[in-house]
Image (cartoon, rainbow, N blue to C red; front, side, top):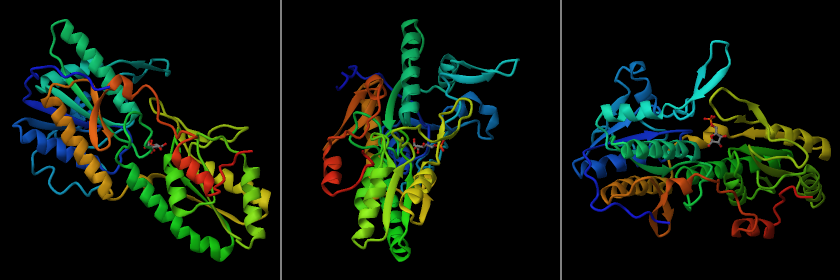
Length: 386
Ligand code: F6P
């Protein structure tokens, strides 16, 4: 899977870093490692504000939308959540939403314009940190840049760094942000046990996980949840209600259900709360629906807790800090050794480089026969299967 680097590696004097899509704990660790590793090679490093907005709309930023990433700028940021250069999941530059005169919307590809802006700033390479959406944009940009180079234009080399708390990117064992999210969700579920036990209630905890149930599965298992509902297993609530009734009969009057936001009922739809132009649909509400129906089916009191964006906040775990630092440094080594159009990926005990095209063409869902699922089943955890 490793792409053969170009030899000798094209020389580099200036690189840019951008963070796109939802933030994830560990982004700042990547930014720091890219900056220090690059500066230790005497390369200049700049950060593009808010995905690519800083380049596309520089007038909207007092600092011009592109900021110098000096050693001072990245000092003391590894433990901080979020991203010091900002991010966005709006305004995909390769399918940019523009309003027509009649009020309807169209999408235009602003890649060429964006590449011109990179040229204006003398940027030789881009380290694009993002999830499937942002890495797809990075891949498209890279393709357009190669076409420009074939016509004699300047080429922007691109290295992707995988980020998502959902852990749903193929070809990397893990993404940073996931461990922090699981850790926090587990802690929250732990805390719910005492109140659930005291009141003999059913507590339903909704966690992020748009298409993949990694957070729900891991947080639910580590905290001893009794049912886990994930997008990969369409659920029915009758088996969950039966499990709750069985626990009642054995004098365990409380139950904990962890549900991923993207979980889908066997006979229904994913729970969507809205969609804005140029953005993915917003998910939410499944926890409340599950709790209401379980209340009807069991006659028990139910409560819902939605962890949502809390899972994206806070200080990254040491695992995510180290992973972020490793990915950032590996991205710079990739450039130094002539790689181009690849994503850094974790393949324990090392990191490898995977073509961006392969990295983004499908999501990493929970395999139903993976060891974690088998373990959960052996533990008697209910997945809402009929
Ligand atoms: O992709 C990560 C994620 O956390 C999803 O689980 C969630 O659906 C989405 O981001 C929400 O993003 P936002 O509210 O920032 O649009």
